[in-house]
Length: 239
Image (tube, rainbow, N blue to C red):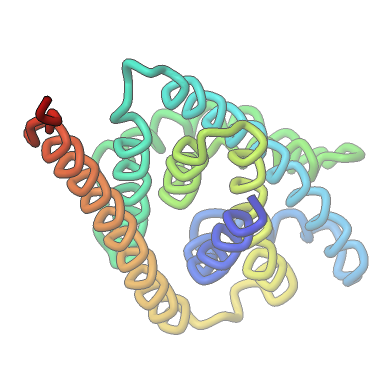
């Protein structure tokens, strides 16, 4: 479980430049009420805590779902299928960071946007006590390729605690990029962000391909072993 958390944290940290474009605006909005660094950091902590709680909740659900599939003896293919799904989701997130867009993803974002604006806009305008925590919890449900990849990995873990831990790692990996964005605003050059995003996209694709290879070859080896065991005739001793 610790290893899965570390891997999720490291991969998300490497790809967290993507979060500047997706969630950077909300991070900046958290610090709009004052320039004091301690206040900005306080708002960021609350926002990240809220987002992490939503991620962990979703990760626990995905892990429990994976556990239910893997615990069914009739679904012996479930672990392999979930591993392949996680690899595909990871590679797809990497392709998104390379600039490839998905029509369904854009459609989902368009559907969520009106509800999101109606819910979050009043909080950002009136800024009641604890509003960054609530905004962060809502951010945890925004469409995001990195989140989808993390949830696929959480399901493949086959455990609700492991799934929650993986998604907590995903949340923690986004903290440095979003906090830096809140502190320096839009001072990070777009070309620099784009370059980092391309590199991170290649890393995610490589990891996704490795996961696909490991699960597909593992399934083939199990199939060959099962076939070989079933085709070798039994040896009977002579009387």
